[in-house]
Length: 147
Image 1: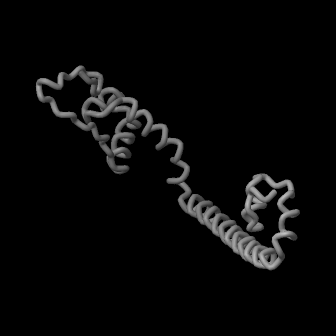
Image 2 (image 1 turned 90 degrees about the vertical axis):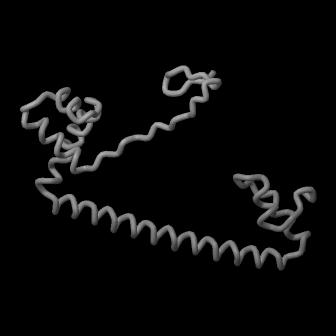
Image 3 (image 1 turned 180 degrees about the horizontal axis):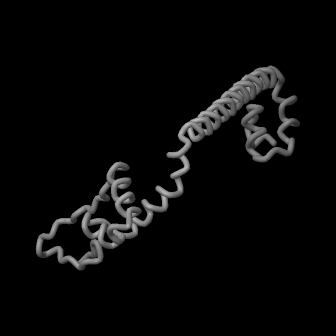
């Protein structure tokens, strides 16, 4: 016995598992129904029933529609805010990319310089207090058992 969609099915009967897929509605369809609802010619339940959708879906679409109505009245403001946020994110991305590159170059330079030191000079550096006890050993190319 197994359960699927809250219905008890028997394997012996040869019932195949069915996958339930979500229906995706277009924004045009959603807008049409919300506008129909806002015209107060039909109730929410009537419209949902007529189009075979859940009333809660229609209620959610209405909330989203009303919450974003300001964008429809001032689309240039929304586009401007979006572009400003995009530029801000791009600048931050550039700054972080530069920082990662700088840190990588510094790490490679330090690793090269430290390898030129003898093992006896690198061992004392392992005792530095870093976030990971294994990090100094790996950075200094020192076997952890040598401590």
